[in-house]
Image 1 (tube, rainbow, N blue to C red):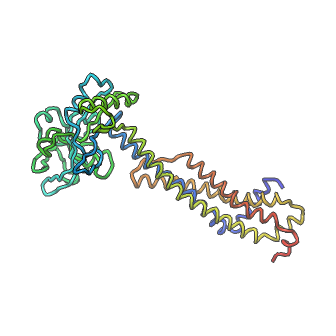
Image 2: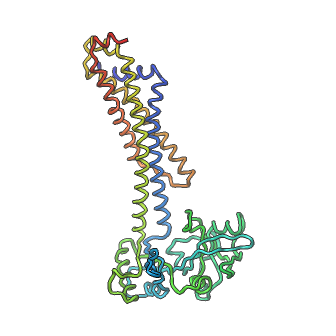
Image 3: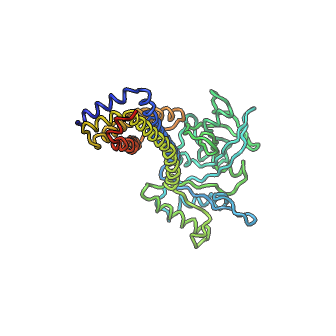
Amino acid sequence: MDIREIIIEAIQTLTVNKLRTSLAVLGIVIGIGSVIALISLGQSSQLAVQNQIQSLGSNLLTVIPGAQTTGGVRGAQGGGTSLTLEDALAIGTSDQITTVSAVSPEYSARAQVTAGGNNTNTQITGVYPAYQTIRKIALSQGSFISAQDVASLGRVAVIGPQAAVNLFGEGIDPIGQIVRINGQTLRIIGVTVSKGGTGFSSPDDALYVPLTTAQKVLFGASHVSTIAVEAKSQEVMVQAQNEIGFLLLSRHQLSDPAEADFTIFSQNDILNTASQITSTFTTLLGGIAAISLLVGGIGIMNIMLVTVTERTREIGLRKALGAKGNLIITQFLVEATMLTAIGGIVGMILGVAISFVLSKLMSLPFAISPSAIFLAIGVSGVVGIVFGWYPARKASKLQPIEALRYE
């Protein structure tokens, strides 16, 4: 009996009881589909996070102050006031630094913004004109903060699209509109292009004002929250970090780097951290989905055991006519593998379709890993062999006389 005959007979056997076969295949379909869909969802989330980080600027270094200690209690990193505008200007003009192309001092705080009868709590960021280049801010209309605005403590602001909707409503042109922040009036001169994102740090729900206006008019601050620095190329990022670090240590009269009252993050650091988190999340999702594959495999084993019981007399007749145990094992393994192969193919199609729909509904980039598809299908084949082996071996061990007497 050659393999072609075995396959034909397996197909005939599986089609005898279509409902039972379909239920067995369904377990594998759900398992494979869920594995592919959830891994794809994790990868889409990872890609979305990476795109959002990269949209903040290229070759980006961010200098933040150290933690502030009050009454012996140490606060969160970045909560200190050790960075000043002079530090930022020194980074941009010092002869010690040769790897920096642009510097953007920034002061950020959340505040209540009102416009007419509407109000919203949003992020206010004081910036220099270089902010637009470094942070890759595009405008849908109007203009950005200028050097003249910074020099004259201009009462102007650039608004994100979500903040504009919150304050003025849909379809209202924000340009020229007046907003109030901490009792001060500012005029909207520009609207940024949407970058996406949600939460407190969303660039779409923010206002940008001249740095001097933020410090001296709105919040009464003498320090800056962060200093964004654009390195000349990806290759000199580490050198730029070192040069900036040594300059700031000198300016802050610190000799030991361990005592630094600031921290320098590179964009790569943030990307690597985000990638590790999302990769762990993806692995967790894949592990949860793999449980359904295990359940599907057990379902196939149960179906095959029932099949062995129903075909006991047939097995006894075959063995009485000289069929070897290996042939019986092969017959049942082929049936089990066909079940998982069909389930794997249908599950792959279903998983890709679900991934596409979810990515569109959640506004995520569509991402499918070929390795995840091959792994899922490969696992389905292994599941068919592993869970089909025991019923097949049980069938091959039946004694012909006892099998022929089975009722």
